[in-house]
Picture 1 (tube, rainbow, N blue to C red):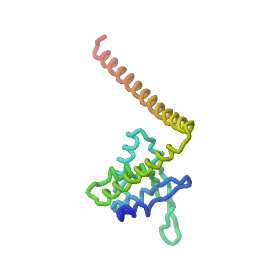
Picture 2: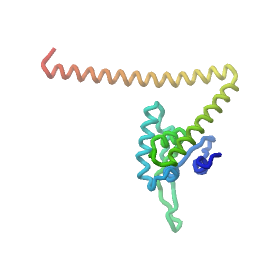
Picture 3: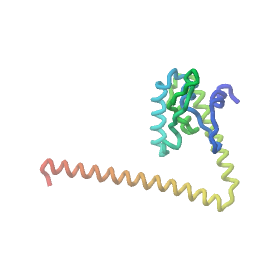
Picture 4: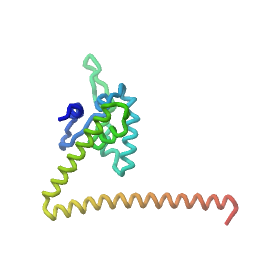
Length: 175
């Protein structure tokens, strides 16, 4: 493994379902942000990119309260975000490009994403024909749901704009 990729592996967590995930606080430190508050704008841009690409933010950015020791065995709740691999990819894409570790992160998550795509492709090839059809049908169903939502949003926007135009015409005294 590349020495630049090792730090990302070291802070990687595996959830109960076997999926990779990372702590935003740990990732922020690794990416060279001195304080978590300086890392929050990067997370915000990554969330916007996630939403703009049609993904549900909560599927990739899970906000949690983590109990941490603060001394003399006392604990306090600290906000953190559990990030999926996709979320981490978006985070490093939206990080400070002047930081060399950001470039290493971009490479790491791009490679890992490609590896997963290849593994998924190989797993798909191993499915029986009826399983492939079911998989593709479910993919198509999800895509169609997104299309319906987009169409409904466009219809609402069109109606709102039309209402505003009619109201403005009426206010101007035209018919």
